Image 1 (tube, rainbow, N blue to C red):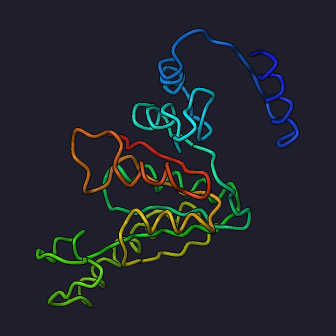
Image 2: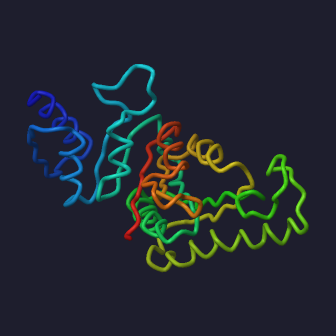
Image 3: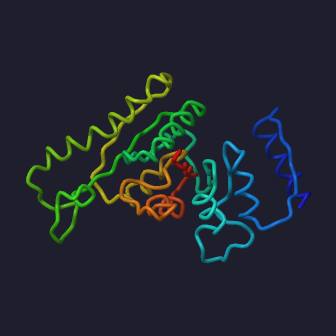
Length: 230
């Protein structure tokens, strides 16, 4: 194990010369140890699968559990990020999502990358359409008015943080689609996707929302899951 840590340290120094690194071997159950460490950490970083993962699983249980129960943001490294791509932020308008917005702006500034603030809507997500059928093609009484109302969310989210990060080039983007496929597709040309743990549609008892889980499992680039401050 110490050999693995030594190799990891060597690789880290190649990527970021001069960075201060400490290493330790801790006995205990993996998730319990990482959960304790996350209490005093700024960020936890894991891979998409560990040594104990079954071959058919897309995502190790440690990553999912730590995203739900950790006390700091989790970054899961997966896929092949586009080094010239944007940081993609999932905007949902929830109070819990505010921490994800702050994190995304900070990451974009650190990476000197543009930030795309994406809000996905459809007629079901806003309960404007209560019949059966496809929410993408459903006819509502005033679709243009609904679209205009939805546009305020990414616009306001960007405006509320832009003054603190004037160097970040931001694009608020409104997409009419199914939510989970939209963010998975957006990850194809991104270098990082940032999501909160739960959105406006989350059930109170769930610590990790369905959108967060879907992106963790299927994104084409690294994913950061940021817990709300509540």
